[in-house]
Length: 105
Image 1: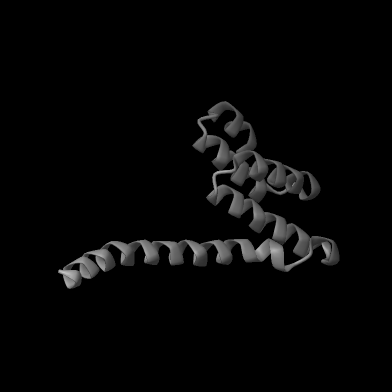
Image 2: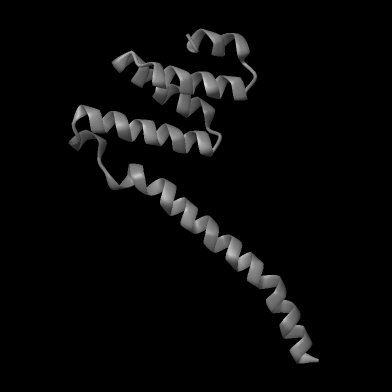
């Protein structure tokens, strides 16, 4: 009887353990980029690159406002279409089509 109990318990806990380990790996993989480098100590191009990567992290975590603010400041600095397209993508996901069309010029 104890063997059956332990077998059932291991069948339940093994997938949970695997899922938690996978979440930890993803967390450290995505959060390592902004935490490992100091934005103030980098030059302008790498600062923009770090901010762009941070906005991608915010998009993956569905923190739309933070992503739009970061991308909008990058677009003002560089006047780049790449950032405007990314903002338009976020707005389209949130069904803000008219505003997305203005950014997608």
